[in-house]
Image (tube, rainbow, N blue to C red; front, side):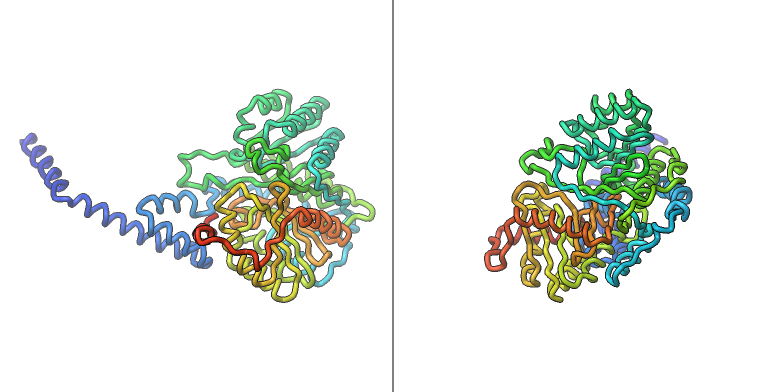
Length: 496
């Protein structure tokens, strides 16, 4: 009897396949899933129509694969475990006393109307106040930057804290290895956070093993596992570049621990970066960012190191440090950049390697130029991401028509991320002008409200402009093939 039942069931399944009903079922499942995920996209992304339309295109146009791609890359998810831990991190680290300073001079400063608007916005989205009394310096030459950073490490007496997205085993990586080992040998606590993806080669290298054996704590930031891709995004990265020495000297900017020859992509070299050195109260904000990241990835609290604020420097200037990342859900970087465009009255200059703005930021950029603000955008002529370059080029005609001056840097890959506004204040950041930096990566920015410093950054930007070729409206005539590639990439720009 049992054998007869099994035979009948087998025959039924065979008939089901033979009649092609399996194909109908798969089509029905596919249509149902696409309809469900189209609704998910509309609900989750509807406040950003361009992003929603791009994801609808992916989900609807590509059976099953589009849904899988959305599940892996569509949401800026840290994962429930990391979000829970990060909430605990903020509860422990982001305390009012760590933002205040005992010296009243740190709170004594005056800002103009435009700067005050930017300061208020940055404080609301990052909870970091302006602190006065910081000695600041912009360093734009790679060798000078490396030498100065290493000199600070060599003078360290208690701690060296370093965050980097990329660490290459080249001459710069070797120099930092030597300096950190020497510091650890003389009793300095050295901690390194290297992004698990960007520094994957270094984390598996003999250099990393030597550092750990020599007493340097090297930790992979945001380690990922492919099997966890449906629980959280595996491409959320710690893109910050920070160095904090003895809790009082800090570096922030765009430079990875890598030589400008950038061995992994030498045909785009040299990589052109800049870093800002600061000494004063705002350095504790950098230390706070590092401490939060360190606690998130290691479970070790560094709160005790935040109890004593760095001293106020004579003739120092006001600085505001801003952390951003997918844990904040507040478009911090994007909001800051749009604000700088809206408050500019005479001139705004932006330098970035990757320019893929969303419609709101792009509109603000064009409006600034049409208002009569001298608006300059400096980007590399040869970009290491063709898709990003094409998406950028798709915007050129509209920007040129609006009066924006576009300068394509020809002396390497311009990697510096800087902004100056009206010669009044400057922004030094690790953030690119794209959605990845706005919504997905962990980034760090510093706003310096000082005309002298802004003039120094503007001079550095002018050097970039002088090594650039300006895109002229009358000469910008891409071929039909180029227009197709540019506009196709632009359709995907909300996803880049």
